[in-house]
Image (cartoon, rainbow, N blue to C red; front, top):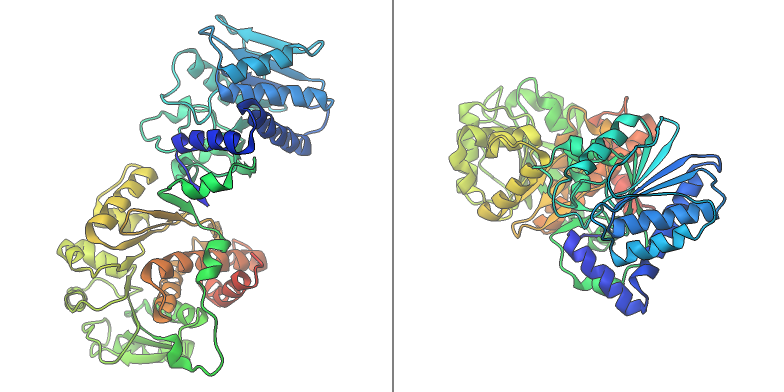
Length: 507
């Protein structure tokens, strides 16, 4: 699913009206009908609604919703239209005219003084002050209204966007001056700002309402950001064919583990096997052989000459994928071995965990990364590599810049993991849950990506598929076990089932 800018959304609305031979008012009515349906499904007829409508088309949406709620039998609907400049958008004015024809409607048009209504935690505020058309932070009286609503304790439903929140970047906006929605009802597709951690408290729950925007224009309009769906992943998955052997599904070599951290090697190798790799070899410290071969008997073990950590990353056999990092530590000899590996130009390559920490200790290694190397940093690892970031949106901007600069694929892990390609295009992942915030989950992801690389997938596809499968496996584990009790091993165990669900169209 494409994630469009606010400007592109406006263009898409216009194209929809032209293609479907409808007016912008017709499209507004369609959107309002869906919002009213959603509210009707959530609230009883005695619910008190206080509608706050701005002077633009977002206000028009809110006025239309208010009218439809009244028409459906809701008796306690109070409407405030803020028209402080004396100029409403055409569609907002049309919706105002429709609303005030209703007998006994509780309607107030605010042009100067605003006497705010009493609000309690039992009330529902419908926020239609400003939507995606907003082009500057809220100011003056609108800030006061916003803060009053936020402090009231009322349940807030925002239409399109919480007022004051931009559709894309918000690093310069004071979160106090944005409506804190309990529920955001967006139209057709999400906005980029929905996926940043700092906006979580202002968005609340968010839901997409399909208003049947023109599919031809959706396909035609370019987008730098994509929300990954199973229908994007399914066509990329290769079938397992008859008359094939293990070597047809690739060999993955994992440089993983050190004394006290062999569990990382175990998690990584298990998930590689569970995700379809034909052969898996772990190169680890000599002292880890009994742990690895007992825990994962299906994997081969290649002992390093050192008892406790890895000192040699030379490749002695033919492998289709190399993964480096889980539990390897940051000993100087390990960093030297990683440098030698990178200088050899071997690929495809996925680097995670301590491999990234090794690079942060020796930043010159960044320039040695082969083209389309996949790195999978969490927030801390990313900031150690590329400098401390002030916010998640700044972090994504930096990831885009670094992916372009070094020609690599950056899997920026988080609640909505973002896979950034060397072109700068970003794929945002919706699968996963808070139960995956557990030791070893990242090692499992490394193994899953390595498995897809070993099977011959392009690095950009291996990264995107791997992240989706990893999150889906976590969702299965959460459903079966619960978020509190699930472990990284559970995520690895369900990787194969996640792949099957995608293929069978069960997700």
